[in-house]
Image 1: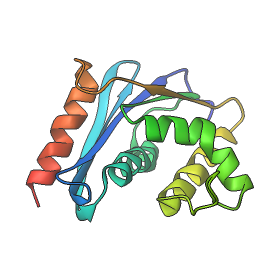
Image 2: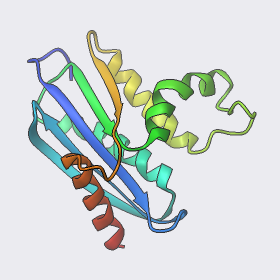
Image 3: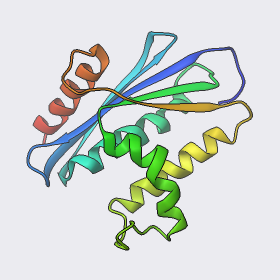
Image 4: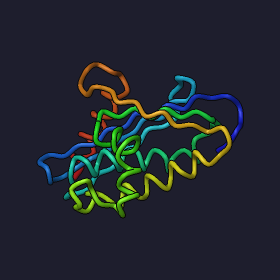
Length: 159
C-alpha cells in the first residue's frame, strides 16, 4: 500500500463469543470508496470476546494487501471500546510500562496487541498514510456492523 489513487478504505469489524470464554467468532467487511471489496470470518473453539474483536481487526489488516485498491486513508469501525481505546489511548502507556497496566499487571491479549501495533505502525510509516479509529454502537442499525455481527455469529455456529 502506498500513495496510489485517492481511495478511502473503510473496515468494519466485529467479534464475539458464546460464553466468555467460549466458542468465538470474528468478521470484517472492507469497503473502498463505499464499494464492497471483501469480507471474511473465522472462529476459535475457546477464546474471549476481546480476543475475537482484536482478531477481526488483525485479519482485516492482513487482507489489505490482497484488496485491489490503494489508499492513504484508512478508517476502522469497531463496536469494541476495548479495541478503539486500546489502540488510540492505552497502548502507548502499556508499551512504556513494559506491557503492564496502570495496576502493574500484564496486559491481557498482549500477543494480539503487539501484532496490531506492529501492523498499524508499518502502515503509518508510509508517507502520508493515516488510520482513523471510530467506535460505533453495536446493534444500532449500522449496515456493515450488522453484517459483521451476522458473520461472526455464523462463524461461532460453524464450530
